[in-house]
Image 1 (cartoon, rainbow, N blue to C red):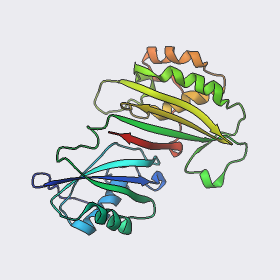
Image 2: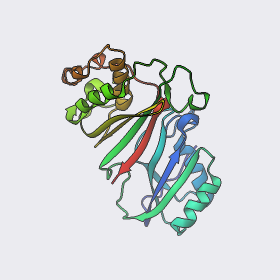
Image 3: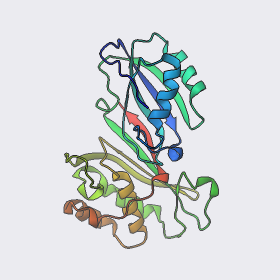
Image 4: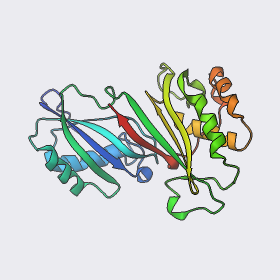
Length: 256
């Protein structure tokens, strides 16, 4: 599906904040042969304001990843007020996507490049019995050796400015600066749900999922908490834990 960009003639820039269930989509970005959040969102938007759209997202998210907060920049010359746009989008969007807010922004606002920090959470259902209602929304880890206090000790080693090459899936994407600054990391339990929260100025490809997989290895006794600084220093993917499944990952907050 092709969309017409009208960035050159747009005189408005609207920030649209959404949340979505990513289990039905192959990530945010439009794919040739798979349904994405962006394509679904733009299809609804086109029904409201036609082809007068230029849409930018705050981040790429992978297949099956969810968002409690995702920010979109819409450049357009269409005069629809933000409150009406919010209402109309929620009317046309499927139940898996909801618009939380629409607000006017400066014309040069960019949802990705103006972002100062992002926060992700990863949910783990720690019970011997799987929860059928969480199959697409949390990783099931059945073993009772999942000590959140030990894991919370481990995640403190993620804090600070580091080269996180060891926590990045390397593919054919262009080489980039692998240094990121993590300013918050915490593991907490509420009943059988364990949540890993991490906030940073940016994230590498699969970084949070590899951080989570490394925590699972810590829980299993295969990696000690104080091994993590050495894993970071090695700058080699093979020393970190596995990449945790996408189902438990949520883009939780985008901070401008």
